[in-house]
Length: 119
View 1 (tube, one colour):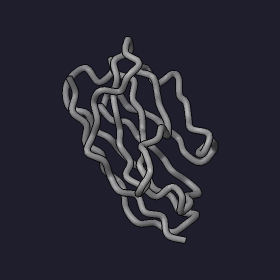
View 2: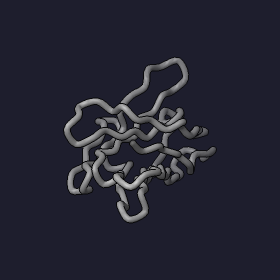
View 3: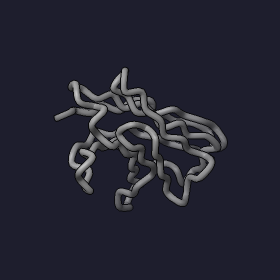
């Protein structure tokens, strides 16, 4: 099983960019589909983006098309979320998560990293 550690959050002005990273421990990172989720204050956690184990397939929430890009480097056990044209409504705690390729549920979660977008 992998353990996940996110980094790269911070405070940015609207229209700015951030790149989040999530490093996984363990040797089987390439066996896991990876996802990014976020939780805004007072709201439920929501899906942002996902990438398949091989990196060949990605998906995004309707709220982020064209602004966010998910990628992964299996040699570095890392998944990234490049966020451009940030909006105040993108503010929240961002979590990376992992699921095995045969599972529909993300069962492994990082501790989260705070992203704050000021207007």
